[in-house]
Image (cartoon, rainbow, N blue to C red; front, top):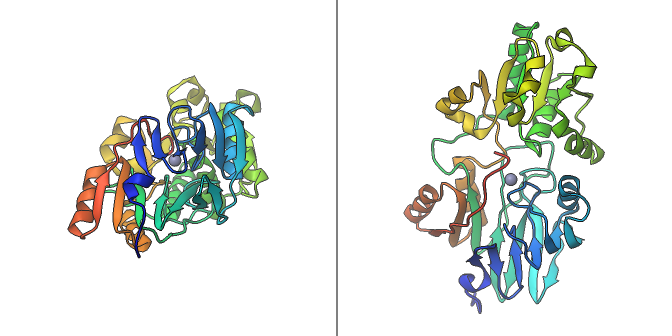
Length: 340
Ligand SMILES: [Zn+2]
């Protein structure tokens, strides 16, 4: 099919982020802009201070919870699968399987279709809608775990290791470090799916988002605040406690009896990294595609050209070239991967 538009005219890298000149909008800009389309609520993608924001209702809600209701001048909710016209450019949001509300953004103009994936994964996750492969000319993929060494095992197996350890050491508590948006709720949901029905104790930093997930129909079961008021050390014997990874380094963690530190992250594949962080029970649970998922997804989009962003760009670019697919790194800056 003849394309009246070149991919490089439909999207450009700017210091603010990925810019669409004909539509005059940015996707996940890292600085304040006039019009921002946002893929999901992680803080490196969803920043406050834009004049207008278009995102799924869940992402708008999450931004409101994190930044306050005045996080943008105006907001508009995008319905998944429904095409909107922005200055003559067709824009459609599709599920990305990353966290609640996460979306890929498909942009089409004069016969050229580009899909910006945002962050995504292919493993099943009961806390959000599954990734939907979209046929396109250019696919913009993340590459957080874009090296063949990164292969995520089934998340059920990882959670089973926590439950086994908890059964083995009933007098100790298990502290699971998990990022506040997405990972924490997924870990709790996995515990429930594995049959764990005791209260799960959570750090205060997880409360708002976990309540929000529950309000959206993601059942996390009985959650209790992991505060001093809720009991002395002995009361946490055998307990499973979930908190942001940063909390485990401070005083907060000392209230628990002889804790076993766990950390749910794709980086736990690297033993050295777990050891350095003092993690006794590393859990390889990631909300990003691993190497195999990246490859499968690139193939399923049928894209002739791949643009690779935030992560290990070079290895994936090289793989594409060997497969005869044109590819290049985008070198966008400012994405620090809040929720690996
Ligand atoms: Zn993310």
